[in-house]
Image 1 (cartoon, rainbow, N blue to C red):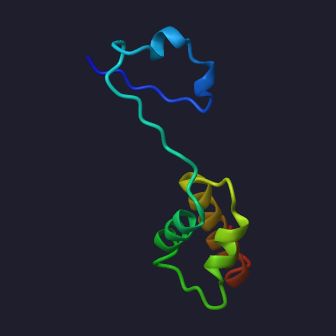
Image 2: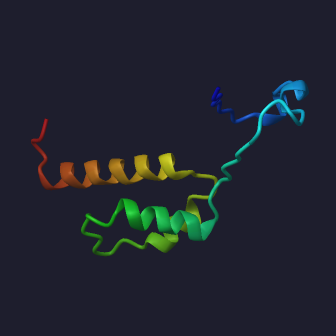
Length: 90
């Protein structure tokens, strides 16, 4: 039997569920640090032209963001750049 669950509030889980012997493993994914955010940004933007874009500054300003947030940020920036280049795009 495999049980997979996710929460952003682990302290609110019933302690009886977290007691040893109930589940074999508990995996926690932490919010990435500056280096982790920079790596995520570099991966997300590797196919994008980045003339004049300072990814290190963005990594500094994006404290608390996780991979999904940074991906959405990159997609939104690409969309705005495309709209700037092709204003009549609908």
